[in-house]
Amino acid sequence: MKESLNRALNALQKIDKVDIEQEGPATSNIDCRVARIKDTPAVVIRIDDTRNFWEIPPSEIGAVLAEVRRAHRMADDETIYRKVIGKYGISRLTRKIEAELKRIEPESISDS
Image 1 (cartoon, helix red, strand yellow):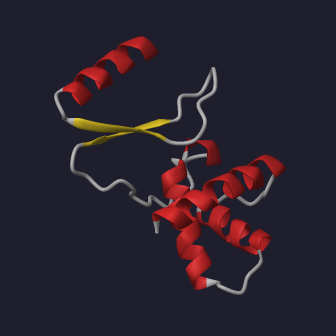
Image 2 (image 1 turned 120 degrees about the vertical axis):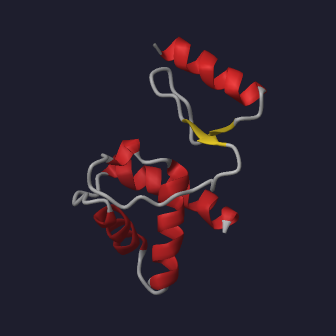
């Protein structure tokens, strides 16, 4: 199934119907590419609690991080990170999530 999807996305990209971007490090079992229809916004913030943290595109998390950082300029990193995950209905700031937020944040600052 993954191969079929990749072939279809690559064909759409060749005829300039979709944009495909690498977001984050790809691993052997996770493909960190985001596909979107050509000429649509790169980031659409969808605040809901139906996705787990790892299903949210890093660009979306980066946009929320930047937004929270602007709203709470004096807050420390842990407070900011807890506010970000709280927006998605996630209550536990694990070491893995914190590490991913730290990895994403510099990218969100450079994109602002």
